[in-house]
Length: 326
Image 1 (cartoon, rainbow, N blue to C red):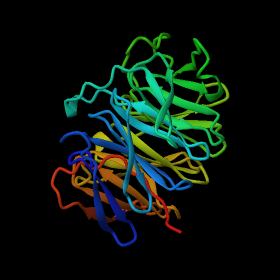
Image 2: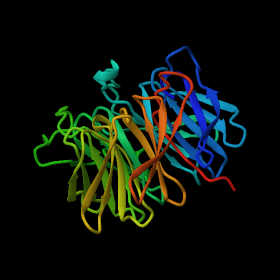
Image 3: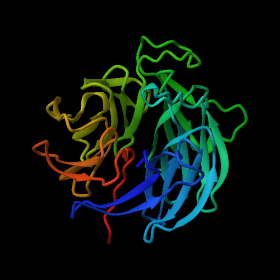
Image 4: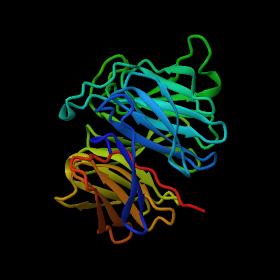
């Protein structure tokens, strides 16, 4: 809940907020942005974009455990649960929020077993925001929001002196140099399929999802969507991709078998941000950062079936993560 420096815990089945956890770590305006859950080891983590911290909490009790100051507006995260390594991306310019974004070109590598920075990966492009880790933890994919390039990082090599990750252009109209902030595609978030063979990129600048072959970085296909596709969720069978469309007050469902796009629009869905599928994939849970609520969408009918409202105005829910208790 980025607007009020809290993280909400929600019982999705009961459709109610169980509790809120205060993450007002330094001062009002820490802005908690994104959450990841480590079910294997029993923790969850949240980034504070304004104060520059990553916080660690106990998954069962939600008690605060530790913090780490990384600075430079930490945004999204990718977690290697078996090795307890957390990769932190950077926030991008958001004029609508009055935020210029981070000038950083680096990804932080954190050993969360002791909450220490063990390395930094410099991709060379500003606002490395979208981030996805391969299933074996050997490759990290990162996209620059400003330079319209994405990068393939070999984890075993990132500590090599002068190592430069392999770069790929999101489109042929992008400058060859990733030092130029072309702002054409404004890549927002990344997702890998189960086989790590395809990389899905939401392009908020061109209003589309682009799909790339991870073996060579070449584009496979693209789908036009509503205004500003934001976060995304891929079904386990890789047949359906769901996206929130921040500027379009909508959520889209892409069916890859039929190559069709279904768009669910609703005026009450103000600035939809994060999205996640329930474990059985029957529902899509959406945070609306411009409103004060969470939406529940039936994934088959693509209809809103419920809303969960927050009591505190201007809560601004953003990042969202889900897990099924044993």
